Image 1 (cartoon, rainbow, N blue to C red):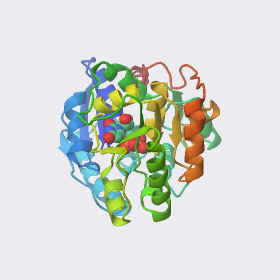
Image 2: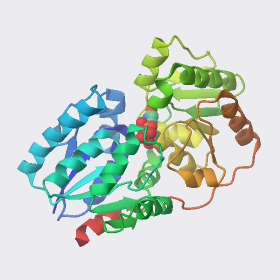
Image 3: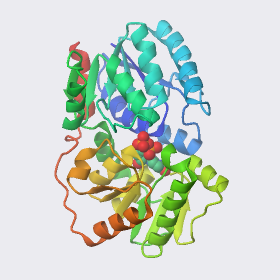
Image 4: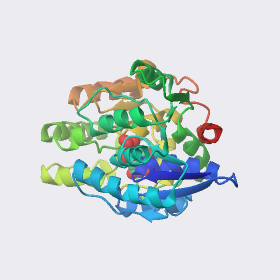
Length: 352
Ligand code: UDP
């Protein structure tokens, strides 16, 4: 059986590495990887392939730095050509990027079976490009692999019962469990007690008032507890553009590889982020998370009081910091399955 996997962005590399490791155990499975090139910065792409042992992509499309429409359109055209040539039995797409949607469209139009990993997530904010990508990909997938019960309910609510909806748990948990043994301390200097922060979502970085408010909150919290922030290139560029800067107490470092990220997660006291993936990883490592967004797809974390939504609001960010720093945070078990998601996915694909 030939499975064609489409990836292009950092979280997809992390998810796909778990599946590739599983597929590798089966002689009857041939996996062909397309890397669309959506993330092209070496720190956000090459390093993941090296340290996570992801098989070398057979195709590198090198499509990046374009508007959403242009990027998705060019990917669609190139992926279609490859699908016609490769004739896979299945196309596997991950998450919610433009690469996900382009791969999904190309496959469906050619009547190639399509599986969506991380199906059913909804922020219910259609202004997010990721939300559009998710909804459309789910609508046309043959197999919908859901990380949570909420994701299953979302799909049922959208009347997608005719498609096959399967709760598999979260594939990122497979990766975190496997790679944490290789966690690596980043070279930067920092204290024993630090908060890990990331910030990259367009809704925060592209709006001066919001970015200014978040940067001020980070600066002021860092006077009390050091903050380490591996800075996304987009955020760096926007901060320069809006003339914003971090105080000296903030350790702003280049984006790190996954193994360094796991070390930071393991050793930090708390996480503050607007990333989807990092909210879950905070939970995997039993760290409370200040979520600098207005809504999250990972609602179970909010329900269990270990994730607090603050948006870009300075006071709300501070309040969440105080609450988690002083509180006794307790973490329920197995919200995202038991770390065998890739095996479950491969098993389901082989049934059809
Ligand atoms: N990540 C990383 N290095 C960094 C920042 C993030 O390895 O410098 C990892 C992080 O641990 C998580 C994934 O990248 O697994 C999340 O990616 P991102 O925040 O870009 O995307 P999202 O999850 O919001 O789609």
